[in-house]
Image 1 (cartoon, rainbow, N blue to C red):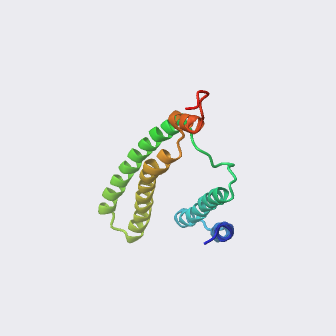
Image 2 (image 1 turned 135 degrees about the horizontal axis):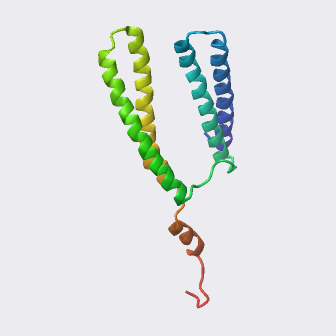
Image 3 (image 1 turned 120 degrees about the vertical axis):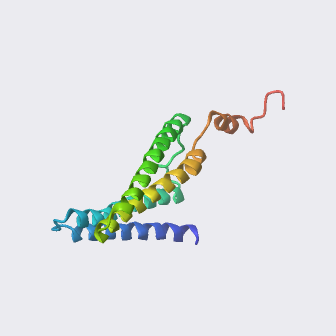
Length: 159
């Protein structure tokens, strides 16, 4: 796919995610059952997230940096600390939902708990991947800045 096709694809997907979000919200306008309503609204929330991610990808492809930039070492350290804590919480949630799933007999309850467990497993995996790849890759260290600033400088003595 060339650059123009990629940008067109992202724009089309953003519109599609918006339609999905609106359809989910319309579907539950008068639904009183909190379980059904929240499961469907979860789809809407995912579509909103997908739209934001696609807008970020579009920004990267069009070289617009609003909302997309390197993070500082300070931001990285704080984010790393928060993600570590979040991963521990997600691991605890996974364990407790697995235990609960073994005890529940009602198939409707099992379905809902499996849905939550699936989300928690996905969250944990995403956080781990984010921690291992993106946090490391988008951090600009003092060493990086020094390297970019002084790498190609010719000193006054010609060296």
